[in-house]
Length: 130
Image 1 (cartoon, helix red, strand yellow):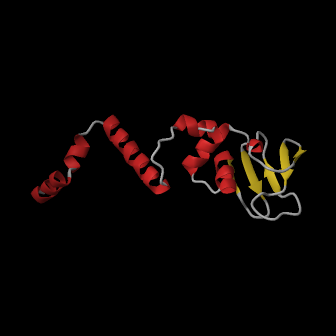
Image 2 (image 1 turned 45 degrees about the horizontal axis):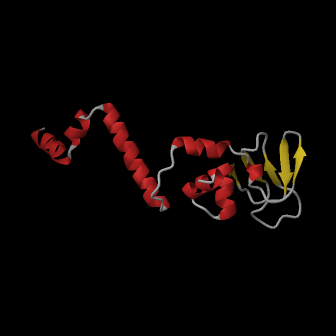
Image 3 (image 1 turned 90 degrees about the vertical axis):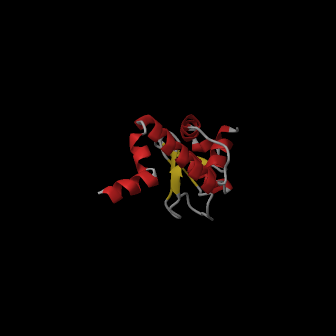
């Protein structure tokens, strides 16, 4: 028992347990943001509001080509592969897409990432023109 207590104290476990909950959450968020920035190669922070704004944009604003309305959805040729028949769908409000030939799907940031070969932070900045 004494050995376990000593190991916990040496590892900082006791300090983490005594740390107030909000501080622990903030530390975890900072650690997550750091790992995200290191993995994407980005040094700038993109906040949740910017991500939300980017996801609210219509994919049609960034789509190059013609789209045909079919009910609430739009159909067109997929920009990610050579397509002869319309297999690319943009759903309802223009925030989700799916290609039934190549399987590409996602939201507005995903579309811009695939179309322009960008990472997520750069795609959000591109969408918002930051």
